[in-house]
Image 1: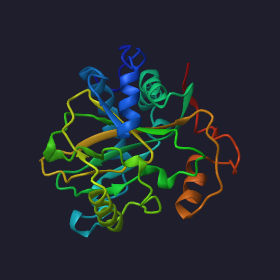
Image 2 (image 1 turned 60 degrees about the vertical axis):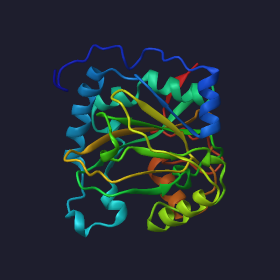
Image 3 (image 1 turned 135 degrees about the vertical axis):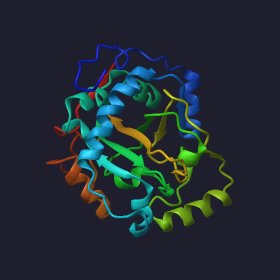
Length: 275
């Protein structure tokens, strides 16, 4: 089956059971890895189209040795749901959004944005960072689903989490960079936060809070590490006054037309699940 053919699998809309133990682990550790969220056939079908659009829309073509640390980390293409009806089916998955809402323990979630993160063969580290540094949002009810489009062993650079680090205040003013890698690494080591950078099985999906610190190792395999991510926010989230340039940029890009105090509900932020 190719991505131009209709896909009749109900996999994206079936219910995935999230219980109190899942929620407790998620809020204590700041992330959770869930097995068998998506079937291999679903990943293969949507992964083909996601990869096709990444190749089409990627604008980073300079040689690896000429790139910055951030550029070496991955090819990054955002809001693919606006570029492909097939990708939109994936991003608008009721199952994936239901898991996000259930883990956050909120009634419903909106889309903040999606992004494909393809770490090429020979790609470097993804430095330590917390996603919510970038987001002009009023509360921490945010979560990113990290969805590998293949099994991801250690040599491909699986996402690694500092266990419980969403409780750490240090580093929340640092964007992703060589500086964030060194300073956050030092702070995490000093505070004795454990690292979980275990491999991902095919069909396994992680969810991490916006303030959880995470990184990824280099891709030393001979294949690209293909990942799709979807960022969800509480459906009642509000916009805050931007505190720095990254906030201002995100407000323009992902919350167009909104101002501080508004519900974070631009046309780019539809509700994807509501109980």
